[in-house]
Amino acid sequence: MALRVQKFGGTSVADLERISTVADRVQKAHENGDRMVVVLSAMAGVTNNLINLARQASENPDERELDVLLATGEQTTAALMAMMLKSRGLKAKSFLGFQAGIQTNHMSGKARIREIDSQNLRGALDEGNIVVVAGFQGADDHGDITTLGRGGSDTSAVAIAASLKADVCEIFTDVDGVYTTDPRICPQARKINRISYDEMLEMAILGAKVLQIRSVEFAKKYNVPVHVRSSFNEEEGTMVVNESADMESPVVSGITCDMNEARITFKRVPDQPGISAKVFGALDEAGISVDMIIQNSRSGGEKDPGGETDLTFTVTKDDFNRAMKISEKVANQINAGEIRTATDIAKISVIGLGMKSHSGVAAVMFKALAEENINIRMISTSEIRISCVIQAKYAELAVRSLHAAFGLDKEQ
Image 1: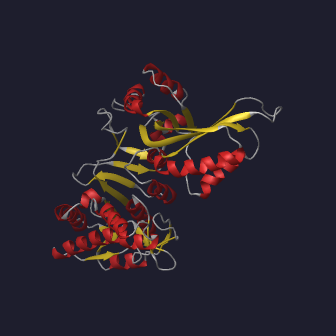
Image 2: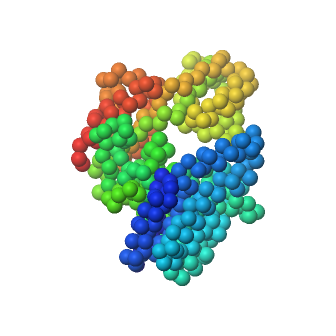
Image 3: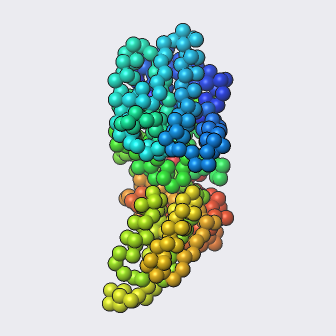
């Protein structure tokens, strides 16, 4: 008898017909003897509609009350699912986030899970219930409802699986697994049968939308096997698991493309200690995450402290306007020459565990881009990833070229 946590996204529960299809799948697993916990997102489009309602009610909706409002989307789906299962003669019980023991910090709209007291869930399972949990939400230590941010139901599901020590956490979505790249860009993309937590985390960070980043972090920390599957068929998907020796065979596992990048450059910045701290400290205080950073000395150096440097970094396009206001203020404080920006950029990345033990990946990447006459604006690396910033208009061409250059269009 396995304990399975299954999470279904918004498109999987978009209407009553699809909720019924999900109930069929849950019922089948339950009747096969598995103990079931089902974590649900709001129906597709509901969260956006609720946000629009809030903005009609107030130009700047109170964050606490917005969390209360948005949590009703998942509450609706969970209740409907439990009703549907009960109408079939099955024992089922729905739980809101706080009832499921999901305890978070105070950060409205993007709360982080601190711990899960799974006593209520265990009790319901022991009574023979199919447990249905509203994803995306929890409560802080004041008892206020909090939400976990976009994609938060993935995090709810993996965290619950970790707390219950589930045998597997199945993430059902509108794709049937993790692919070597976006099939919409590259028709030759292949489904990956097995991928490590580290590779999946890099892919999620770098633009792959299959799994939410924090859910992968949870899975890695607590060693939760995650199975990414389609809710529209019975095919096996992609297993996200711990790295093993046989997973080092492909040098590169996937190519990602992130179009949500913007570049900011401080020109002619004094080349002095503490300058970078002032720039990035101000951005950090505003809660703005910086991705890639490059600093180039224009003249001077240690022997000539009067030299200048150019400082370039990237942020998300969502944060670009706020980052620019802060940057303009800091530029005046540090006597920078000017600020230049670019929003027509894309970040292309190659990812693979095999990069740890194989050389030449960067050479293959740069050669493939050069053959397509694609200029590289920025480069950053990690142990298992190389990323390049290029002009956005070349993004799809770059993805297809790199996919072919690393042989990802061939069966491994």
